[in-house]
Image 1: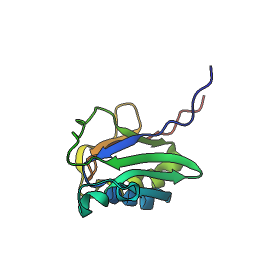
Image 2: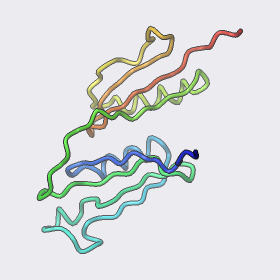
Image 3: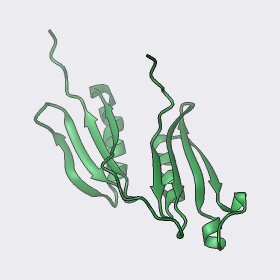
Length: 144
């Protein structure tokens, strides 16, 4: 059985997809493609026409995140229990701590990034756009 590598989180927002995707594009040094409702002749007013119908953040040639806004006449689905996970080993610590610092600004930190019982540095937060994240930095593995 082959695994589909074309799996990417698709985030839903009421009206902040552009700001969230622009922030994530800067954070992850990615390329951003944005399409508005207005570009497809949709939207009841100027503000709604400017909302993002589809946005995609590409990093190293692969889709990292996608997102869209939900027009006011549509119900915004409730938040799920899904979290985006950033993880790596000791060699990734500086990069992952940098991501944590940027994501932490204006966030709700549920668990600070600190040593966890399993030996890794671990933290969880919900960023200022309402996106929940885990960050896990693996500890040094014993040589054996």
